[in-house]
Amino acid sequence: MCGIAGFINARGEASGTVLQGMLSRIAHRGPDGQGVFVEGRAALGHRRLAIIDLDGGPQPMFNEDGRLAVVFNGEIYNYQALTEELTAAGHTFATKSDTEVLLHGWEEWGRDLLLRLRGMFAFALWDRQTETLFCARDLFGIKPLYYYEAPDGTLLFASEIKAFLDHPVFEKRLNESQLELYLSFQYSPGEETFFRGVKKLLPAHCLTLDAGGLRVERWWQAEFTPELSPTDWAQAIDETMQDSVAAHKIADVEVAGFLSGGVDSAYIASLARPARCYTIGYAEAGYDEAEEAAQLARVLGIRSRVRRIPPEEFWDAIPAVQYHMDEPLADAAAVALYFLNGEAAKDVKVCLSGEGADEFFAGYNIYKEPFTACWYDRLPAGLRRALGAVAQRLPAVPGVNFLVRRARPLDERYYGNTALFTERQKRRLLRHDYRTALPFDLARPYWQASTGLDPVTRMQWCDLHLWLAGDILLKADKMSMAHSLELRVPFLDREVFALARRLPPEAKADARQTKKALRAAAARHLPLPSAQRKKRGFPVPVRDWLRDPVYAARVRAMFDSPAAAPFFQVRQLHILLDRHLRRRQDNWRQIFCIYCFLVWYEQFFGSDAA
Image (cartoon, rainbow, N blue to C red; front, side, top):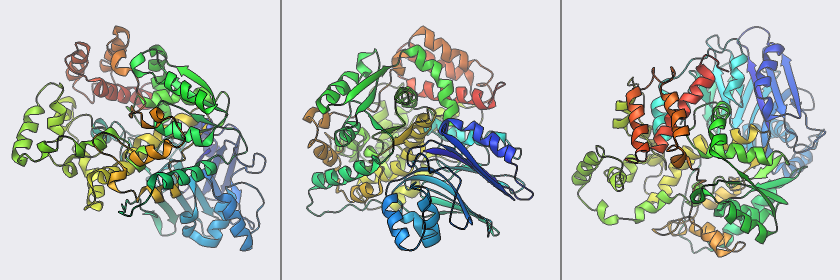
């Protein structure tokens, strides 16, 4: 796991000094070494966290004749098999690292190399002869990659946006139109970012810069194709997961694990049996999963350590979390991950984690919705819309959200399992009406592509492309790399998805349970209570902490800060907070969303900005 950064000048020689500055910004991604390549218009840089071939894998790395140079962030888990295949084809390997298969694989197969890779990756390859840059990102977006085309035509790329801040052609400007989408999603969705002109290279996309200009293309499409064949899905899942976990354990350093009270990390731990694992805990009993995780660790024979987060440490860490995220993120679990990764990084360089199971195997509680209160959906559409319109004007009491949600069919309203502010609420809250895109505009292509499938699969399709890449994986990467820790995600494997995409609806969810087939597979290795435990979603006690005068005062001070007034109707911010404090409404997610944006804005655009 590493960090990459570089640029291709539109004209003139590239500067090594500028590249050094860019790499310094992301030094936390790779404390074990730095490598640079600067020649003509091109500058490629790499920060290394040494995991495989500790002595022989420095980057940038070159092919035999030196024509190709590559910088790479990630892990290729089938690199040994690819090395054998390429060696048999006549290629000569100088290292034992997975990076080198990218060079020889590109020589042998060109862009078809991407379809052969099993792993997580974001890489940039420079052809010195044709002066062509090729960048690619993995299937599901486990590893991030950003790019920026400057007004003069210079192209910048990096693992983190902050690397661009030290390049003289980069114009740091706020993309205000992203704020409206953020308030709905709680993260920055889609290709755009909060920095004007900076774009994400989306999952399964590649970028080419050559004499013909800049082109971005999709190289693979994630699709669900449920089958009706009578298959023992639990056995198939278990066999595939055992293979994936074994592949994800390949390393020349210790591989540890994360463990919560949920089935996903428990199943990974039961298959991997790492020597130790790490857990987050809280003093607030309703949110604490530490004892459940500790009991399971004892059953599995794994040493475990709990990092308990007191509220003061949580709130103090938010500025660092928002800085490392690059863009505002209102997922409180990101702060928990920040502490969890920090604890693990005291001992190890690699941990296994359970991201991706919910999207692949239908784990979110909202996936039960198509099976509940079905009678309501049979009411006339006009009546449901009218009740929903009335409910939007009511305080957030139990039942109101149901009426709002079920006012329209699923394929007209669902854009993710977290939907914060409605359009009406945003109009009241924001000082300006940007109106560039509606949340469902981003989801519509995935609903159209999944026409004819069952509702749960269609929600999965949407979440796989938006929520997984925009929230789950981004915070996993940024919070682990903030502590120079590599996070590996065995569920998000090419072979696992090849199976998961085929699961029939009855193997996914019903009114009582989610991840039905996955839980059955996990029950082969776990105590039944661990395999069947209801999803809790990495709970954090922010709701309760916000009612403590000490932390409510922090939020109120930020609402009154100079950062808030240009964007928000400040009086409405205080109304949100006051109603939460008086227990008239449960507004913690909305309050935290705005607070995180303001903290992030101070980090990157305030008077003491980065």
